[in-house]
Length: 501
Ligand SMILES: [Zn+2]
Image 1: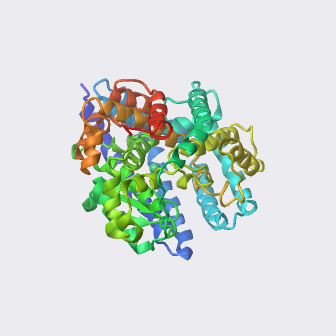
Image 2: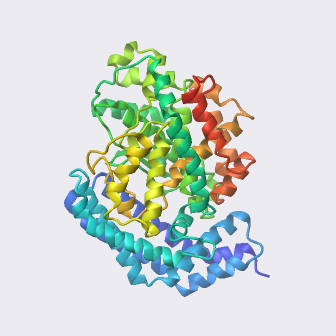
Image 3: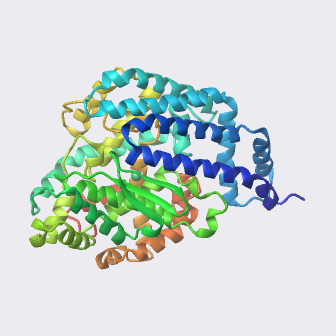
């Protein structure tokens, strides 16, 4: 009789090879985003394309395909293995339909578009990137056609399924529609409430001071520097090339220390999630299954629920006093809290306050949904972007740098990714509520020792983060996703002069 061990044993050499290729691709991507000289980038991207080709070749190897199918039919596989096999089957199904040459072409097109976008962003030059972007959007529509299954009502559903299995345009339209109404309707109250709070002038601090602060904040958060490092990039991100390698980056803005501080808390949250994976799980190749919504839940949990809480603020202030000095030496905790919770409709998503953040995501969701479904053209995109900012946030977009060109996602071919950020906020509030029934998270924050929180997360949700996100939140918290927890959380923190938050 065939056992799950046997079927998995036979697959392991292939999974190991794929893991090593992913490792290399990750390292090269990190290099391109952080330290590569401008003129070396083309060659590095070429190398990435070749490695990606090797990765795809494994997925298209008939013996590998046969072994995955064989293991999938094995009734003895455990739940973790079943989730991994479902994902491998999904990938095989896709790559078996698309010619390898087409996949390589799309990968090259994506890298080229990202590279042109990088040059155009600062100039606000949408015209130059437009032809590349138009081709990329067409390629994504083609990709969606290959991925579309009976359960997908639209092309966008097929791409969303890659990121957040179990969610659909129909479900998100409802969740985000309600959330947008709530946020836009109550924005005025949030703004009025903060008028009564103390204010702190935001003074400039040089990069080296902010770098010291970043290292200390990561330490406080629980980041393990023996398994990770901090770099610098245009757009902050986290990558985990390997089990003992969790790399976070930040971007320093000398004029506003809050930008990097909260990027570091956010990216640190991503890395800590990975650093909580049990060592024993690494060998079964399931660790990378956590979806973006699950990853964003952790990053946004540490960034916002912890990082902007009144309880944790004195500990952050203490580090600011140590590393930045100046105005912080005499700053009251209440003024510090007011500074880090300041609500102001703004143009740039990554700089948005906690209250308005989801509106930035909802705008992107609505636009990318319409782009992929063919309702909106790439030529119309900048104008529609600007209209939505006017409608939802009440602000005018002065140029494309601060508008449609600000995020790398679309220009790197990531469509269906943005909803994860908002879902992460919703799930984070639900986890916070659930953990409050068993431990006292506010007390942990007030002591500055977040270990009880990390332990709870490790036991309840990191332990099942290989599940699709809708099942994961149910297993972690005991109930299906309930957006009400996030609305209550925002109401407490921003609309009702909070006690608890
Ligand atoms: Zn993130």
